[in-house]
Structure formats: C-alpha cells, structure tokens
Length: 289
Image 1 (tube, one colour):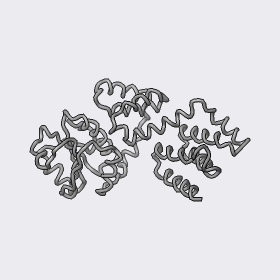
Image 2 (cartoon, rainbow, N blue to C red; image 1 turned 30 degrees about the horizontal axis):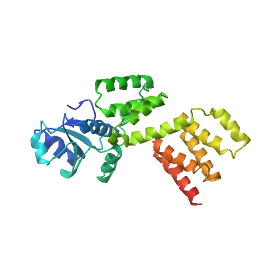
Image 3 (cartoon, rainbow, N blue to C red; image 1 turned 135 degrees about the horizontal axis):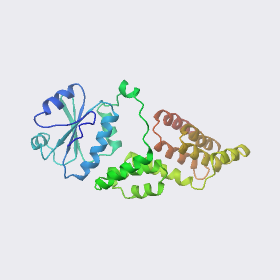
Image 4 (tube, rainbow, N blue to C red; image 1 turned 45 degrees about the vertical axis):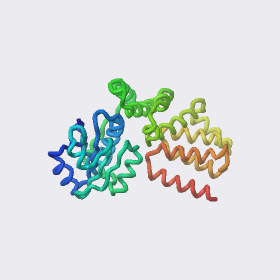
C-alpha cells in the first residue's frame, strides 16, 4: 500500500481509475506505476518515483496500481511485466515504459512529455524546518536497512548520509555492493565523485596553508588543486570551481588534464545548475583556446 501521507501519490483501482487518473489527467499529467509486492525492482523504483512526485510539487500525480489486486487494469493497459510506468495526459495514454528506470532516465522521460518541476507552494517556502542532524539521519537509515535489507535504495540513502558525516570508508563499501541499476543512478554517481574528492583530502594541508603556498607561488598548481577541492568539500562550490578554472587557464595539460577532470567531477556533485552551466561555458572557452 502507498503511504497516504505522501503528497501527490495515491493508490488507483479499477473502481477509482476513471475519476482519479483519466479525469484528473485533463488537469495534471498522471504517471501510473504498475507494480507487485513480489517484485524487487518495483521496490527500488517506487521510492524514486515518490521522491520525484514530491520534488516536482504537483507537476504530475503518481498513481500506484498493484497488478495482483488490479488484474483488470493491468490487462487493459496490456502490462506484461513489472515495473511498468504509463503516462496519462489530457485523458490519453501517451505510452508505457517497462523496467526499473534510473532517476536520470525518469527525469528525461518527464521532460519529453512536457513535465517540468513546479515551484514550491508559498506555505512550504515560508516554513523553515530545522535541519536534520546528519548523525540522526544515519541512525534512521541504519534502522531502515535492518528492517528491510532487501531494499537496496535504503543502502544508497545510507551511503549518502554516511558521506555527510565523513564516514567515506563505510559509504564506499555500501556503494560497491549496490546492484547495477542503482550503481549507475545519478545519486550514486555523485557519491562516487564525492568519494574521489574526499580521498584527495586525507593528507592534504588545511585551507590556510594552501592559500599561503599560493601567495608565495601562484603557479603552484598542485596546491591550487587541493585548495579547490578543500573549498568544494567545505561547501564553497563557486570558489572551488574558480581554482580549477584558474588551473585550466594556467596549464591545460598539467597532471594529465587534472583541472578538466576535476571540473567534470565537480559538475557531477553539484546541484546548482546555474553555477555549473556558467563554469562549464568558461571551461569550454578555455579548452578551445
């Protein structure tokens, strides 16, 4: 059963489908998630769909259909395997895609049918929630993994939470054990990039020492690279990227293209699309010189 507390997510049945899916799709597109209790990939895909439904703030609705309980609906949509995602818009079925799609593929599918994230409701913006203690988050996710060890999505969430508290070793072990469909998930790729940056800082000097080294010798690209990583990991993404751009400007070939590789890894980690786009253009311009 679906958690009824989730916004924009509901269970659909043959009896309710006309009202909750077909008619509702005249106003708001509806994704129909055909799933089954015995289906392991369904349990991986479901939480990703629910996360996107919340993140898109009602730009689409998510209808969950248990094919074992709703065989009539499954037959009507000619569902031959689960999970399968159908898109209903303006009262019409646009298509159905089988398989446990990755988050990036789901975002692309939504974009192709004209679904973009809606702005957060004013009341949601107005409420400033207290940030969750990262250690409490790790404890919560450890309990989730213990309660449902078959759900690999919990393990990915735990790996990401462990990175937040600096437990890179345990996070890496969890990432190494993820199945292929999650190992290539956007969040797993970002986590791998973060691990790479964290590994670089194990024996790196603090920011102050690196800044002093650059004051003495601005051409010390090794110190500049470590300073960029330090700033990035500390949360000052713009300053960190600026160091990598300066490396690229000074010597594109340094350490086998280290500046370019660092920028690309940083782009994978960051969620600020405007910043990434701006710096990506700077990188492209320098590489063409």
